[in-house]
Image (cartoon, rainbow, N blue to C red; front, top):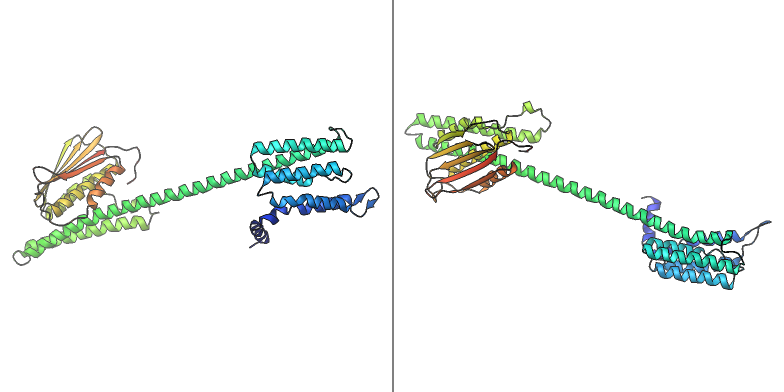
Length: 393
């Protein structure tokens, strides 16, 4: 640690010593000034040096009581000028006190006391020395008092500007950290949602096909072999999608062409084929006039259909589902309906699938409603915009 830093830290713990430090150069200057004569150096006038030292004693409390110290030192210097005009030195202690008041007091108080002090010092000096108030020595003392106040206000202004700049920098840094944390959280949720959709869909199909294979292994080995082939295909697809998702995380600088393409609505046939192979009958219908879709909308629609069919296969007791893609003028409505009976789920769920649907739709300014139907089964309806100004998926 550098010596100046140690010195500043030590002074910060000793306010009285720090406040009285200006007295040292003042006493040295007083001794030197009184030791200079027309014929050269001589012994200092110790009475003036002593008076200067005594007038500096109140400065030890200038930080605690700036106004009181300023008035006290001013009264002492003016009294000395009146009763001992022949030895009265420049009121240096008063100038230090005025500077401290300007730094620590209010603007109005500092200038009021500084102006009064300047007029009083000038008038008393002129009266006790038989000089004009506009004479050189008198005006010099007037200028000293005004300069001490102005210097104190300038130092205070600079400190305030530095503090404001420091606060702005700290606030900007905090905002950057908060923005970084927010983006990390959003990315974590997005990755968790993507992995949930991939894993839940494929593992559900693999589980269903494994059950079929186990059931048919003895009585119908040929169909059991087909189910095992579907398990192989779905597990490979799951691994491919997981590898692509993880690859995006581990290789952020890869060229876009080296990454696996994101699923789109054109891939629905392959998705439906996987569900049908596991025993869920799915019918896909299109209404309206299909038009160009934003990539974010296509991915969101695909994932919602994927999750809704996965839930139908896991939780519904029926064996069929209908997917309807309704192309409107400004939006795409995705409806997935199954014919399962309420209250007869095939397995327990965590609820993350429905949450993921809502989060995906909200991210592109769309909506999702989901719930059981009165006539039986479950229905998911998503309203998604056809085009987006900007979106992140």
